[in-house]
Image (cartoon, rainbow, N blue to C red; front, side, top):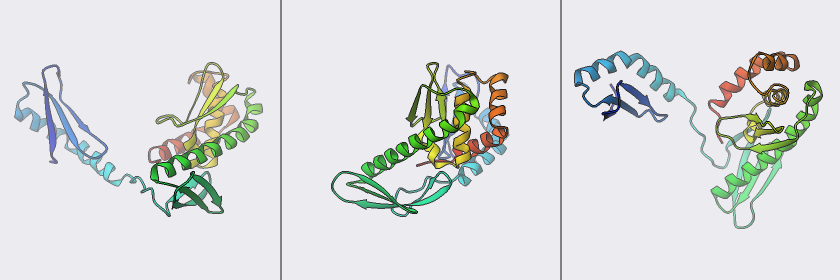
Length: 221
């Protein structure tokens, strides 16, 4: 059994085992729990612990931000070229190479994100122009954001917010989010009428939704 941190609490009534993304384990137990009960609980949890630690160990690691890093740009692969030098940060694409010049890593990352945000804005506008007539609705405003847990959202006032990281996924998955949010202009919920409308506009939306979920679990930049 791997090491774990034991936390006793007078407020707790049940045993709970937590495993964080680094694999560190924490066992939360009621204050009066006997050691024998703790050991029995851990034995019962052993298969789950093994599966969870295996999954974490096999999960893709966050790539190092360095010269030569491979990046995704919709359906294309591009390679990062870093140039550290004084002055205003600049980003320039030359075919499959993306040159980022900046004084340090933090400014280089910020410049790269800004470049992706602007690319997302232009691409989103083009795809909304394509899908809005199919849905029969158009947003009042488009917002490019950096949400941590959402690819997109639609406000009651008609503003569609899109995650700039959509530029890191294939074009057909970007299209799925566009169609999804446009359909929310008609049905602002996830009930049957919404999915029916999305299915009319994009018959294979379920496959795209599943692909996006899988990619999103390992996406980082």
